[in-house]
Amino acid sequence: MKRIIYCLFVFLVVATVFSCKKDRNTRECVEVKYVMDYCPTTGAALLRLVNPNSDSFTDERGNVVSEVAFLNVPDSFKVKDKVFFVSYHYDAALDKPDVKPCPAIFGPAKIFVIDSVSEIECKD
Image (tube, rainbow, N blue to C red; front, side, top):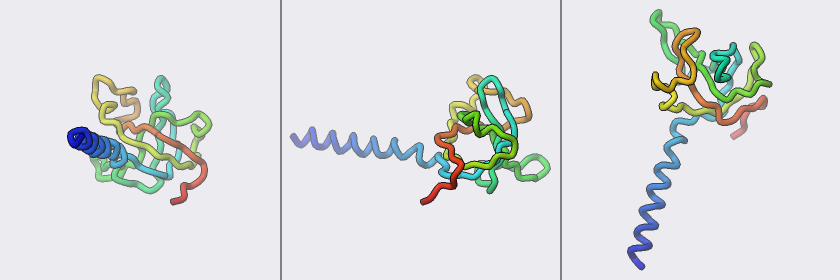
């Protein structure tokens, strides 16, 4: 009986650790602005982070680039300069050259996956 309880305890600890892994990579309620299609064949879109965060990067000239590619942007939000809010995560598997969902048409960009989208700012 003690062995079963011990095994259940270990399973719960492992499950908790792995379930939190995505949370560390997830950004919640980030304000973005639609820029343009990034890759029409997969539906990826280029969005600008209104408030640059750690997903922005610095280009070779030292400028902060806050435009990143996103998968799962609903068509109704693909309107030039439309501002909305997204929750998203980075999927490292998508950044491997042999599985990239979209070649860099307009230059390299990290590709993120949208989990949810809203026109209304999220409330804590």
